[in-house]
Image (cartoon, rainbow, N blue to C red; front, side, top):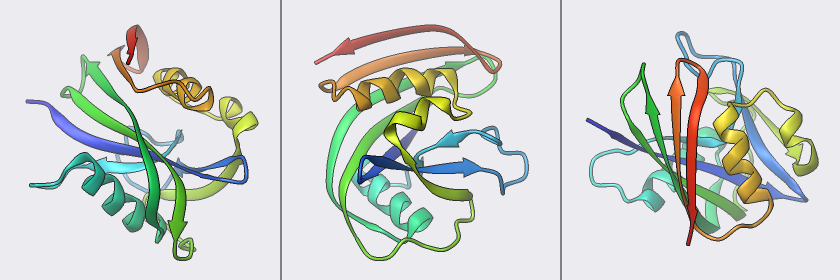
Length: 154
């Protein structure tokens, strides 16, 4: 059975708020830089999940955001995941000093591709950085290696 998740990149001053996953035991994302997000709770829409996860991980309330795409992850190790991708350009509140998931850092957009990222994340981050229209992307992993990718712009 597949799972639904959200992933969000909060924008400010030509930077994204990135999360270095370095605090959870047995974290498949350990050592990787990702956006904020997580699994849907029962009854949540993609927007509900994104806003809840952003608040839980950052202390910020997302008030101005765009639904940018859906990424289907297929893996030989994990269940299929449908990740709903957002960018947030307006927030309210104060950034939390600590996050249970890892270290939060503002990273200039021009430096994002220099981080330790999943290879598939590089593909959809490029679409965000280039302000592409809504897209559907499928990423197929064999272990930690990206084996195949397809995309369609809408």
